[in-house]
Image (cartoon, rainbow over all chains, first blue to last red; front, top):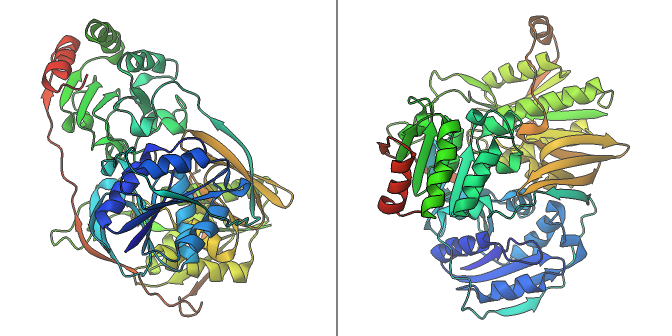
Length: 313
Length: 249
């Protein structure tokens, strides 16, 4: 078997999610090649070559891949991936965008968001917002798979010495152009890979009150997230959303503040190692999944938490 | 311009999902069904485009058993003009749905196809992208804003870390994310009017598409449940437990 892993990166750094996807590839077993497609992304290729278990790194460096447009990546990966038994990418917004195009161009099904590898053709994935877990077998000769990064422990990012080859394949579908992007600038860790996440819900009452959570988060080096209710209410932007329709997180510590615990939210965070819930409603469903529950008014508890953390951190 | 909207009949999002005791799937007997929430957003966006004078006709299509016609009627009550029902009692997977929609696109020649980004039952997030690839169209996935300008559509997309705007040549495929709009409710007079709007029914065979699922579901299980832990009395006890018991800070 031969597996092609599509690297996730921002043209300068290899994202950790790639190491999680490599772990899924390792669980399938076989020779693993990595494709780095981007613009001026040579450093990413070098980083990928150091990852554990990589056989070869292919670097497609061209302006047409600079913004990871799904139309161009789809054509590139469908062509390069033809010779492999499996094509894997992280189930982030880039992978979710281009991978189904790859599958359609190869006339195969895609298995989305896998959490576990049972065998080379059988995978476990969540359905119904994580309320059911399906074991799915693929009969296609090429398996196109997106991987839930938090479900796999990353392989080592150092120590490997794979060969790096330039790939001169330029696919410009000519269907789409990049216009602009507004990426949230933050010194806090990335929500999807942070070790600690502090999230606020509708109980926060407004966006201004999220500053309280940010102060607590900064004491612990944590990322700040939100429930869909807080996003829908306009308190915070959607890229902070944790849940089935937002980001899936599995940190060491997840602190849910003023979040009732709708099933959609639980689907995005219930794999966290330790869950803390702070809510004034003791009947809130979040307490059913919390390791530590505090029934309290968050507007009193959060300033106290900040003081207590200052003592111990 | 003509807009095609695809909608899916799924379990109502308020219904608690139960796995069947024999682990063959999710129990859908006597369960309330509804239009997939992301599809409602797709219908709403099409109706808004029509209200702005951008869209001239909205065609809504659904694939599945006879009962899907309820969701088509709902879309007609919300402002779609005409319905197409592709009737089948078989399981339809994303690639097949995309092939069926492709044949509808070839017949109807819409300038814009709007779909939900994923359905809340299979959670695949595939059909729109597959349709775009099969028809050679560009795609604006996870849309939070859609602006048609001349022969292009600018789509602002919800991506990891923020927003990204792409310009797509028309015709194009757009898949909706949550913040694109807030769907309206259908009024009673519009529900009555929708009953008289045209609805064509056809089969996959009529469209020349053979249903051949590539994935088989071996079993469906309930997720491992987490046990509720302890309640702490105050913040000091919480911090103490996190530091000395759980050792996570």
